[in-house]
Amino acid sequence: MSKSDKSDNGLNDLEQAQLALVRFQQKAMESGAKVLIIFEGRDAAGKDGTIKRLTEHLSVRATRVVALPKPSDRERSQWYFQRYVPYLPAAGELVIFNRSWYNRGGVEPVMGFCTPEEHETFLRDVSAFEAMLVESGVNIVKLWLDVSKKEQAKRLAERHSDPLKVLKSSPLDEAAQSRWDDYTTARDEMLKRTHAAPSPWVCVRNDDKDAGRLNVMRHIVNAIAPKEIAKQIKNPDPEIVFPFVIEALTDGRLER
Image (cartoon, rainbow, N blue to C red; front, side, top):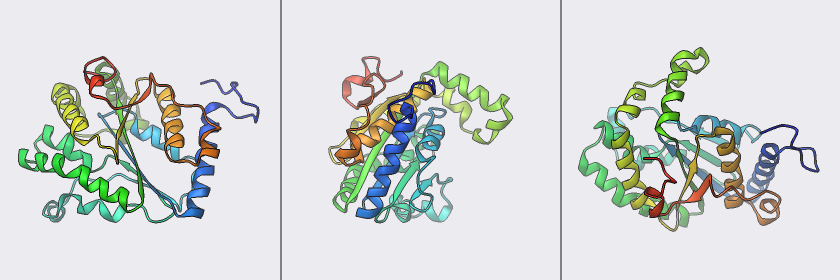
């Protein structure tokens, strides 16, 4: 997006969305609102960059980004959701999960890090768990960032050729392409079974990262900000951000 595309207050669309998020956070800190944003998606779907833009001007004290490493042996012996509970938001806090308990809906079954029984138990229990969080006052926004196989391959290659992106590399990178179809199957099952009224999935077509970041922020503002703040921001482009529906798995909106 060109920085010359300015609104009446001299801000471009991205800056307008960021300003709305700042104003929302001011209100949330005053009111004690609790917000949890979950970012999921294939490897190299653009989660890191989107989160960076989202949090760029937010309060460090009231904003936390959580990206947990693989569980320890002790954590593996716990109730599955237990390791995530300490990171949930308190009053006035915004917590962002860069991958979350939905590891068990995608990465873990595809890579054999959980048993089929553990996978099934997760799919059965997660909506009830999230419903309890919503009932306790947590506002949950769940985002699935989608990317094409060709674009993913390009971004994964850049991680190996660009020294500034080397820290994004993961031992799982190669499996992202070789097990593409397995990840697609896991994604489809996860979205179908965990899309629930208290915590619905919203999908983001993110081959164009700039457009994706802007529209994610627009969606978040519309989803969680008071009306007087949200009305100042354009609605997200429905070609880029849309609520999950079963038809999206077969009509071309989600990559296969």
